Length: 81
Image (tube, rainbow, N blue to C red; front, side):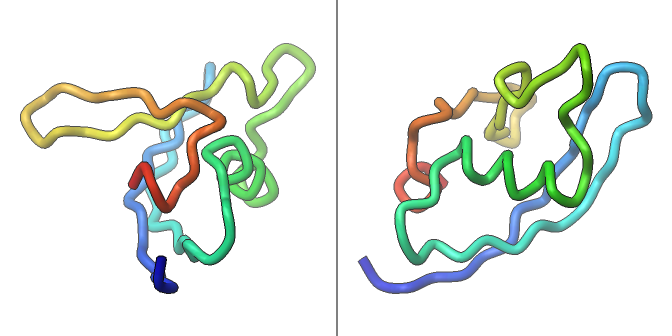
């Protein structure tokens, strides 16, 4: 697979905190998984707390028609997105 870079439009929803909307750069070199992507986001926007861990979050893809589909944490970003 050739090297590709792209940007994701993210909405981070955390319990009891207003939504954060941002554009996130992604490099598809290597085998970055959805779980690793969540860890990268956690370094910038704290997701983990005493009561919440990364396992409590999901990455969902919107179909543009109002429905969304959850990505599994072990899936690679390059093959999924």
